[in-house]
Length: 312
Image (cartoon, rainbow, N blue to C red; front, side, top):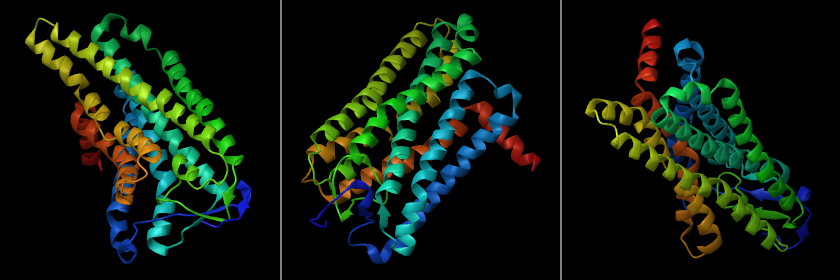
């Protein structure tokens, strides 16, 4: 990193691929590109099926559409810079572009966390209070939940961008990944970063960490209700309706995000490959897993995908 301090707008960053494997970047781009393209195709398919099938215009599928949109946004926000570095070794990215990418990456990640929590609430209401399900989860209330998730992200992340713009940087700053993340940018700050770091940690705790705790509580309540159902057949049917949601919550979304944040702050001596692998898992796997889980575990989605392919 250059020793001269620069204002944020004049700073430039160098993205990093896989240190020591630069000659194999083309080959390493194959699984990354394939994973992203499959994720984009899968989420587009989910959105298309829900849009075309009137029977799927229900609360649980509206939430699934929001989840697919957030996964699409996450893939689209990261893929261009990843391929630019791996294919053309074009590593430089200027501060404003880096800040925009960072903002969208964290926005879609926190939105995904909020939507997964909303989906858990949907299943909790459907199983614990089925007679009031349609009166509680009306289209109006679903819209309010979606707007609330978006507002939470905007209110949490806007100060993050402002704090980063007020920092000073070197003329050229080397980042650790193929994309821009908040804590990675903080690592190259030349001025005092304590406030930005503490606020970033607060964002993680008040969004991803809090959501994960509420998700665990929601599914404990769901399982408690399911196990109290007298009929074995009804118990199995109720478990089947929420098993895909449990699989989605169990995907590598929360642990890599929270772990990556902790490693950046407290794991300075961890090998660089640990940081790189966790960052790539955090961004690449959830957008791929969600459409896979829901197309396999949700019979309504699976049946209609097969039907659409047969029509084609």
